[in-house]
Image (cartoon, rainbow, N blue to C red; front, side):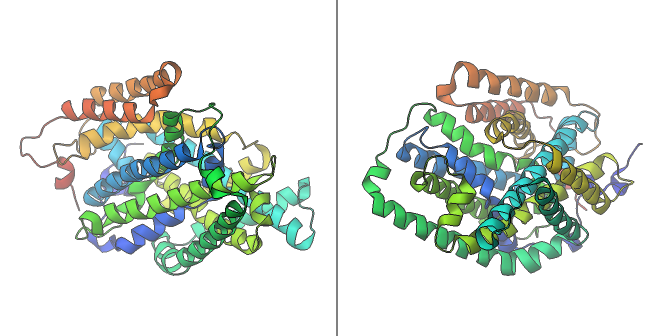
Length: 439
């Protein structure tokens, strides 16, 4: 079906009346989305592959770089008022953009399914620890999956803006911070008892290099790149610079990513070999309550994935509203969580990075420098942008195979950004067509 910007919320710049997010809303949202058991689990992958010091450097540097990319994209979404699908259309053309939009929907379905599984397994562990319930069987798995699925569906029936401003900012954020503080204190105390010097000076086993560890840390924030504009477009235009969508997104996500990666390293360093992350958290004093609060926060991540996926799906088929798409995608994710094995996380993350690092390298090179930009619907296919993206995917995998010591994410990002910037189409007026299309 042919669509016009007026009939498509995802491809139409958001009006000022709907721009209600302040700096603290952006910060609270992205801190909340940055916290999760999955992030801690990926942090646990870093050791003993690399030493503690190398892991700390990779966590801090990778988080700052990854969160910086999120913040840059957030500023672009806030300035243009466009959703992520709109930015893809403006960069790659209305026909070709359907490919990255579909890939984004697929990855968001995958992430939501991951989140439902991790919430289910956390609930099973809490039920066994606190009440002696055995929920690992088929019936228990189905019931806990449907429980979290029902909560997710209920949230999707409401308003995203109200959820962020009334729950996440006011109640969710303080509770999650308290949980992280308590768990950090518990595991830091255990590390101190075992010897902080030994922990800090522990070498890696050489199975992962420094730049490979950096790639793994960057992969987590990069997985959020196709979502950030869907929320940043609701930010107030007047709140620019470090006080608006840019600063709130960067500060919120960087803090959460560093904290959760570091906590994952701490947990795996004190836990008995073979102990999974959830079990280790439960063994900590007060871990039951802290894990419960983190599981509730995990629901924000699942919601964020489905909501953004529904915005992208709406861009392809605007006859269905964003809410209707969200409910349908959530039902699909619940079904997948019941039947699919979902524990091969590291390859999944790195595969996503290979697609979305060059995708957004091109978008930022074309639209993120304040120069000329391509308006939504101006052309069907921008072949130069499309070829740079495809070449970037190949370069990412080539670096991983033949030069892993240099990493893949940063070289690919730098190359695609430069190529997109020097090949960006100029406009006669100077200002970007995106800026002119604001409404």
